[in-house]
Length: 346
Image (cartoon, rainbow, N blue to C red):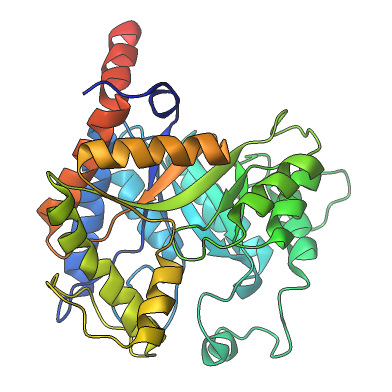
């Protein structure tokens, strides 16, 4: 099936949270994460990002920098990074040193995506020793400090990141509101909107980002990416069935009892409020057969004009997830482009 023009020209990437299955173990989740990264690398995806979360049962990517190193070490050329590191949880110097180390180990392959949410609740913020009155308002100052550690050291600079100084690791700002969109634009940084769990306000955020954009040493033109749930299967019915695993994940979070991924079901047991709440979280999801996904994804790209899509696909059985990314790569033709690039290099 031939890819439509905009889809064919749009890079595709992957976001992973190292989800555990119900009654599964972190080790199993990490094995699946690495296998997925190796799989999508072979199929031509551009990036593989991991997101920082804390105190959420079934989500094993809390030590994000460590897991990034594990994935980068098990792959060869796909870019690996954070989607994102929640900067207010950390001293900027520590993040500069961690990612400076990653960049030294895997040069030219590391991305540093940053967010300002805690990645958990108040108890998590307290356990992370964040200021108890912190609401993320100091995020711009923390970002400025972090960027100073990753830039070429200034004369008289008393604190430097070793490694990290002078690495100029690409920084992305991530968010689901106007705040990060405007900040990313004013600083001339790429911006990613988290439509995979909070799609409301996406178009407005992208418009604000583009209006406020000022060219920088990292980026001459605005570069927007959308995190998007995309699940492809051989038929619409099978894809919708598999997607109930992700819907159950959102449902359990709404019920404040997050657990590992659950098997798909024919019918979800929820009330009207819960159904509407899950639908709101899942509103941007594109689920279906190759033909359905191609049509809907092309329409999404036309509407948003994003430069890149970061795909999120959570299924209970690992082979179903691998197959979804294969089918999507075939639609976009990214595997063919990877093979052509390899032939040129050789």
